[in-house]
Image (cartoon, rainbow, N blue to C red; front, side, top):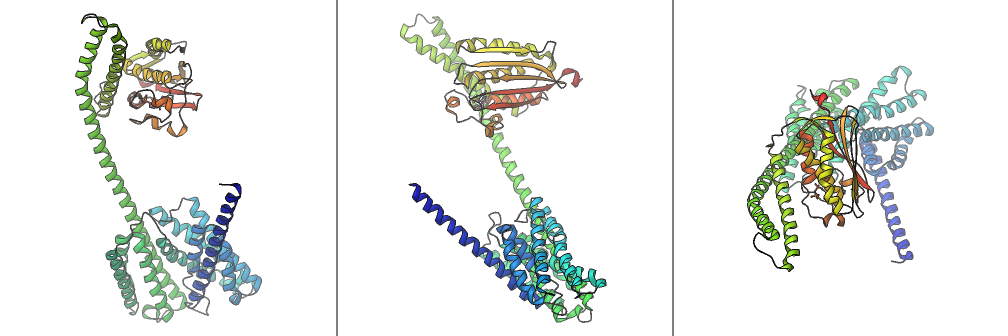
Length: 546
Ligand code: ADP
């Protein structure tokens, strides 16, 4: 693609993004304005005191989903709503600023606590109630009531009553509308409704609406009898059921309060507010807490199931590998025996041109034997069948012995292994053979995974009351993302320097298991691509264990 074409594509992509953003902002403003105009019809008194203010829910979700830029739409729409109502144009502007600031702050608070838009954990339900609704909306209530008081529209001694009415209205808007809008977001985790389940939910919602309506027609104060139905919706459909159920029940309750039916017939405005908001708060708490509880439980069950099947799969794999390695062991030993007899002439003189082939066969058979040994070790470690015999040993000796074992191979590669050991004894409680095995793995890897002539430095020191062995190489290094994964069974890096060396990816897995059985840690302490790696084995001193 030429530079010109790329610029053209970028330009049209930017234009598309701009148009989408403008559409989103316009949608938020219109939705806010319509919701505000409609809710003013639900005012309990003087066309002003509304028990629910749904625009707050719309504003909060808009900021959570579209980002802070949605604040512009919210401010403009709030200004349009408040100008005809507000005490004066500047007063209306300040109230609109409060209406914008409240959802902005609420969204920030929710982001700070890692709120999930799917509302699928108990703490999400707690966060939207505590931070989103109760804390966040105190901002708009404080600013709004202050403006009305300063403008003389509300007497000073009515400040707190106005504040309370404003606050509950805004908080209810968040509690009822935000979860409903969030439940409509395309959410990959929420199971999409089959037509049958959609029908079940619709019937349930109609039932909730009708039952709430009927209960609010009588003065017997039976409105709470609708709760079992709301709980069924939350239980069966989680947020997808809980959110619309709460909205329907509260919506019917608000309309009943406005029309003054049932328990509201004889109540004063303050009493109506208390009855209504008491009912609304119980509806939201019951539905969301139950929905998120069910979601949390379902997730835990899923994780348990996954864990159980992974454990079974891993056990099956281990026992298969154990069996395969056992079966391979005998033929490999026979093969190795005959090959060494061929090589040393016990079977009579072999033709000269066989000698290279026999050498290769012997090398490959040794490799096979090592792989079978690794498989058996891994299976033994997994079934905890090792009976490590531990004694107090000087770790310096184990390091020196490992260096001596690796010396011939290092020499063959023209490499160098140097040791730097503590001056005094480094006593640890260990199975010397097993620790030797860990060091052999680390040293062999250091010798193998290098493009340069290998240079290894082995260290053994006392550090902070622990014994620490370091194996430092000048090899290819390990990418950061793989530095923990290399300790998983069968993990091998895809670096060509690694793949050309035969291996199955069990060495470090076995080494870490052995380390952990000794109460030790084995980690990649430092590694840079092309610059080598340092592994550190850190274990408690024998004196610390006694
Ligand atoms: P194997 O050596 O059989 O592959 P290991 O468990 O010993 O199994 O090592 C796992 C992987 O970790 C190796 O395949 C390699 O990618 C990486 N690795 C281990 N040690 C080193 C090292 N010293 N330098 C670079 N990569 C290493």
